[in-house]
Length: 99
Image (tube, rainbow, N blue to C red):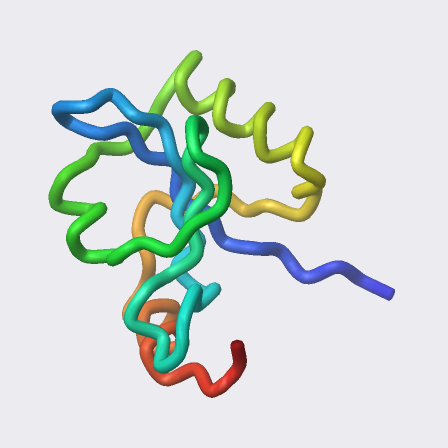
């Protein structure tokens, strides 16, 4: 069986320097107003996609490596790092009926 890639955005807070990963295709609640998120300090949570994008910037270099290593330790082995969610990915989140 082929594993499907899971889209992930690696981000760092502009003010807080908090490292986190957004999963724009994975809803964290019903009706999909929050996407799944992995915060380096707090673990898995839900996050408002648009607010997170406004309050953060892409994580690069050693910061990106730190969050990817933490995700690998958590069991993620099928990640596809993206810079931004496409309209299709965002629409998938906001119209999801699965939780």
